[in-house]
Every structure is written in structure tokens, then in C-alpha cells.
Length: 200
Image (cartoon, rainbow, N blue to C red):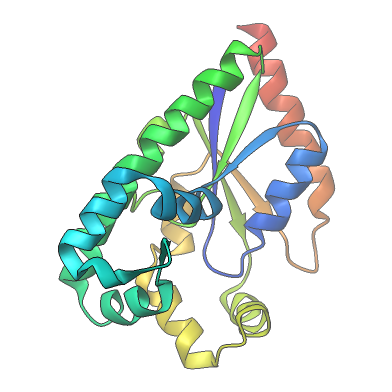
């Protein structure tokens, strides 16, 4: 079974692309959603975060994400410490998820994450797909989606690996600007990945 990563900067449309692959029957692991689940339920994460920030970082059994965000966005060392707790657990959960889908005979699966390289998830991938969109369009989309101002979104973009760097390391680039239709690109990639598996 091929394991394929889908990434791209904030506002690049990767979640929409992931949903389109899902409609073709591809199983998709959404790292953001799964990390959200695991931060509330995994004992290693709960123990690690409470050791760092105190038991009150959890309220009624749920992580106080607003409080955590206010801490880690102002402190790079705290951010690194949190990532060191969460990322290994997400990688472990993803590996278990892959084994279940491989046992079901699936040809390839997709892992959607904004921080594919930063989290080390790229080392688990056989192929990488990048969602590509001009920066200005990404900022406008993200401002609407997140109800945030331009500087907040721009700061988040600066904190990520640049899309240009990611695209150089990708096997496939999906352009979702006004000059390209996204669905034909998605169908073609699905076809190529299935053909590769059949050929092997």
C-alpha cells in the first residue's frame, strides 16, 4: 500500500482537495482532526501537557486550546516542547491506522497535514502531494475562514515552510488558482497512484 502525504500552506485548499480524494474512495487521515482528538484522550499527551503547564491546562477533560495557543505562540521553546509530546503520538496513531487500511487491501491512502515536514511525517510517506495557490489568495481565503486579520495570517504563513520549498520536494503539485481545474488533477493523480500499485 502506498502512503501519500498531502500538504500545503494555510489557505491553500488542501482540506478541500483531501475531501475530493475521499469521494474517489481514498481513505484520508486528517492530522489536525486526529491530533485534536488525541490531545483529549491519549494518556501520554495528557500527562506530558499537564506536566508542562499544570493540571488546569485541561478543563472538564478537554484541553484548553485557547490558553495553550496563547502560551506557545509567544514562546518558541514551549511550542517545541508541545510538538515533542504530540507529534510522536500522532505518528504512532497514523501508523496503526495505515496497518488497518493495508489489511483491508487498499491500494493507497492519504495523510493530510499542514506541517508534513515540520512534524517528521514526511519520513513515513512514499509520495507527496502539495496544494499550490498564490500567497495573496491564500491570505484572503484564510482571513475569511478564520475571521482573522491580514497580519495574523501573514505571521502564520511566515512560520510555515514556504510553499516554494515544499513544491521542490513534492511528487505532485495541485494548482487551485483561477486558471486550473482542480478535479481533473486529482483524478489524474489517483489514476497514476493506482496504476503504480497495480504495476508493482
